Length: 232
Image 1 (cartoon, rainbow, N blue to C red):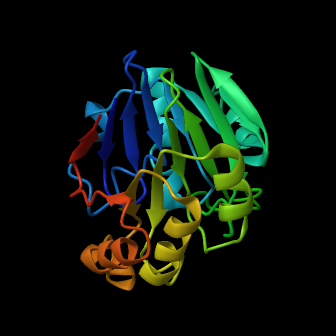
Image 2: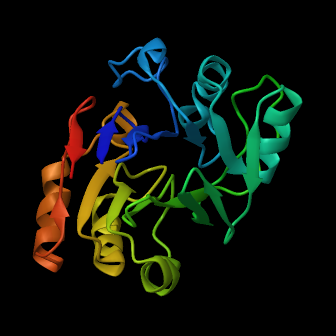
C-alpha cells in the first residue's frame, strides 16, 4: 500500500490490489502541488466537503478517468446533474466499492460549494474511514476542529491505523489541538496535512511531531513533502 501526499489535503492511495483512490484532489490550483492533473489516475475519488481547495479537480479527473465520486448527498446531487457517476452518502454510513469500505464520519467545519459562481449549501463537512482490502484503516479527517467524537466514536468504533490530520490552524485544528486529537485517536501513524499551502496556515510540522511524541511516543508522525509517499 502506498499513500502519496499531493499537498494541502490531497492524497493518492494505491492499494495492494492496485486500486487508486484520490481524496480531496485539489491539484491544478494548489501552489504546493507539483503533479499535473493529467498524470493522475483514479478508480475512486473521495470528497470531504464542497470547498474549492478540497473539491478541486474532481470533475476533470472523474471525466477523464471514469472514477466513481464518493461524497455527501448534496454534492452528489450536484455532480449527478453534471453527468458524473456518484455515490452519495451521509454521516455514519458505509459503502463498499471494489472490496474497499468507506465510512463517512463527522467533521466540524463548513461546507458550502464555493467553486461555482452562485455559492450554495453543500451539506455537511465530513471525514472518511477507508478500510482497504487488507483490513488497514485510513482516517482522512477532512477540514475540522477537534471534537470529542474523535475519541468516543472514531477511535472507539473504527480504530484507524493511519490518520491524516490538519494542523494549519485558522480554518482547522492547529498543532496543539491536533496533538490532542492524535492522543485520542491513538493510530499507529499520523500524516499531517492542510498546512503551509498559504501564508495563513503556515506551521512547523516538527513542533507538531514533538507534541505528539511527548503525549504518545508510540505514535509515529510521518512528515511528507508534497509528492512524497509513505509505504507499508
